[in-house]
Length: 99
Ligand SMILES: [Zn+2]
Image 1 (cartoon, protein in one colour):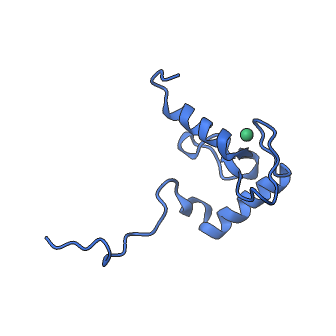
Image 2: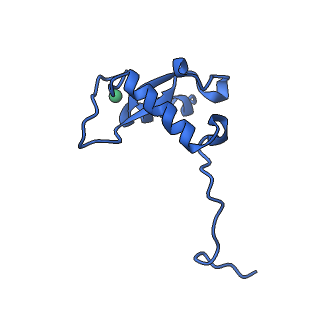
């Protein structure tokens, strides 16, 4: 089997969540922006406020994950800073008693 890691273009869809559920990248981005604007770019968990230096620091998060039948509505979205977002993701992944 010949395989070139540089010559093949990998399937470029993001796999971490289904972007199609939002009708594409643009719609998700618009929705996430609305969520962050509504929350005034403030982390719901720790109160961090995004500033121009840390432009990407606040992220839109699903309060109820899509995998648990959460919706794509603004009412199911909250703004979290990247640290709290990671903590939340870790928590739901580590149900096996770590920490
Ligand atoms: Zn936070």
